[in-house]
Length: 110
Image (cartoon, rainbow, N blue to C red):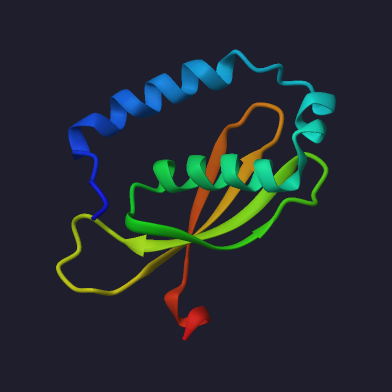
């Protein structure tokens, strides 16, 4: 059985992760050296946390852009009463590790 992290811990875990990631060099050379697989994991985690979607998962990723990685994240909005999925486009800046999110129309995935 997988243990779930209490929601109140999420901010603390995010803060600790941000401090640890802040210790890494942010140069393009260092980011390129970690490889696409590690970049996708880092970007996916950052996008899932920033989206605040419940039961979120990465559906698609494209790490090949020069300055950004693009991902699509799906999950459920915390305040939603129904089981409808929400989809978000996430742009992850490879140098600053900042995330930009934009909701995508659900009809595109049906």
